[in-house]
Length: 404
Ligand SMILES: [Zn+2]
Image (cartoon, rainbow, N blue to C red; front, side, top):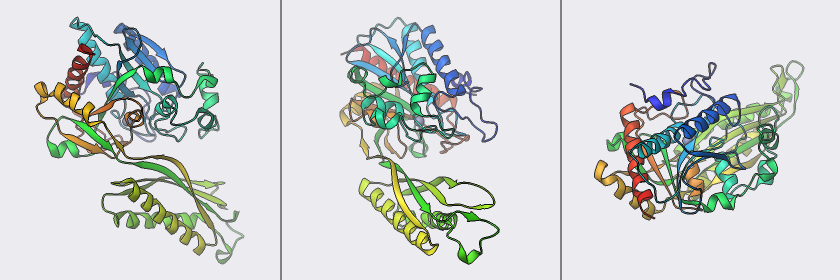
């Protein structure tokens, strides 16, 4: 049995080459999903608006202070799964649909939100919509970001009919949020082990993205003798091969290279530069810093051995997020009648809720993922558990909208 609300959008953005789905900010798939979201929200009688940072809001009641906001994102990683992001959006629509069909009268405004570019797959900054909205990322830095085809974020917003000059910190939108709840498929095995369909987030491990840049000498693949080379690809490969051992020396930490870029990138050309994209996380922020430091030293050593130089560029960094225990307890109370004691667990994955938690009361609900896989086509949640997630979100919204 499939979870019908997600089946509705299953054909949008399928990636025949990578498998799974590829939906990136304002590309044709993302635009189709955004249109679908607006249509579904309007069918529910919600008023939709797109803010200056491409986030879409669907309002029940007059937008204003102390609103309850729920939702997630519609974009994906390249070749991602069906649940990461859209599950939180469709569950929010389902929960609102249920409340409206029972004649429930909210005492606070409610918005369902679809945040823009959470995965950072197009412009390489995760949680772009929430970082711009909150001011965590200044617009002047973001607008010049370029995608792989060379289009800037400013051009992309402009082409979509959004005014790039308005992008950035949006105190009005932020001040309306009285509570933000993001429902999300779990991205690990925590709820399998705890034997529960849903859980609440305690914290998000600190994480970041770095680039190890190796500079060598571009030259001819045929005319350059092996001993005369300064090949940054060899230095980069040796570094990547040694990274797992560095990470495994710090139990619980993770270091991943999922992307490498060679310049100029020709088969018969020794690269002049290679960029290795690093994602690193650990139990605490000091340890993450140490891990990245050790990998940087490793890179420098391998670069020197190959007559190259290396340097580290920090593309993003989010320290550990601790969700407010009082907000979480409010959700736990709302869930108790239907779910009993709901487990509380950390996550290693970043979320818009993590960005927003610095500014507004924020909580997260996780839905069990029996595959334990995420950011890949095998990512999964049973229809039964997805519906349990809708039940949980409905209970939380009911409790928070009935009182102010
Ligand atoms: Zn997500």
